[in-house]
Image 1 (cartoon, rainbow, N blue to C red):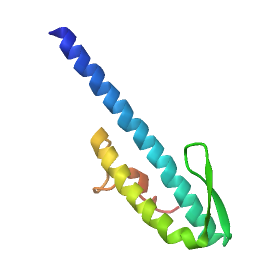
Image 2 (tube, rainbow, N blue to C red):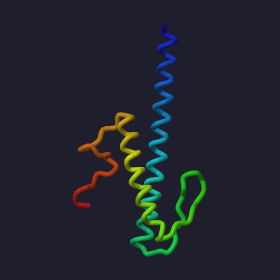
Image 3 (cartoon, rainbow, N blue to C red):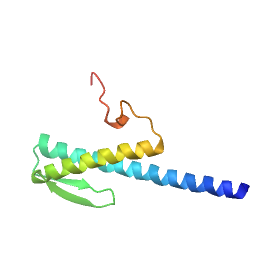
Image 4 (cartoon, helix red, strand yellow):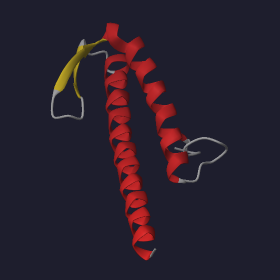
Length: 104
């Protein structure tokens, strides 16, 4: 019976590592999208080479901003779901990642 419990513990740890890795990758893509949106809207650059997280880059333009914003919002929701799945505490029902820091 101990062997069965040990195997369940290993499976649970493997699942937790998978979800933690997925969360980390999703956060990286979220910030890449954020950088692209900022660069295209605030710095008024015509194109931006965005890291896709898989070792390649794609060029995005100002016309892509609405779809980038939509994708970023979907990733934000995914991050919050993953944090909840992993038991990461949230503030007021929102990821700490998206909480503003007063005075900054």
